[in-house]
Length: 106
Image 1 (cartoon, rainbow, N blue to C red):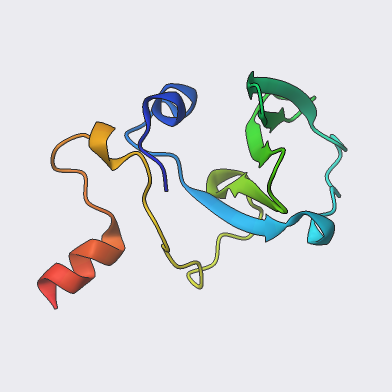
Image 2 (cartoon, rainbow, N blue to C red):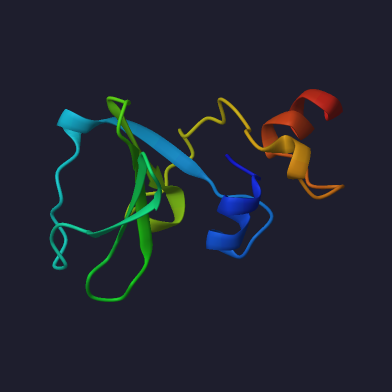
């Protein structure tokens, strides 16, 4: 999950939720095919559906991982686990990830 200014502007929400995959394990199977790519930072590229414009993926040049937006997944299982929250300095007050709530509430 990320609450940095960049991700919140792109998502229009207090946080962007991502799930990571190794580059070599990701295959594009949807009717739109390979995403349309835009560089949003010198070393960061974001992929968008060429048919509808949905933000799908973020890839850094120096990483073997690709980060896929959770809202773009066909199957959003409950087996996804929050492993980090970046950009928390920019996070809106009162926005707490569900995993943190579980630990607070017991």
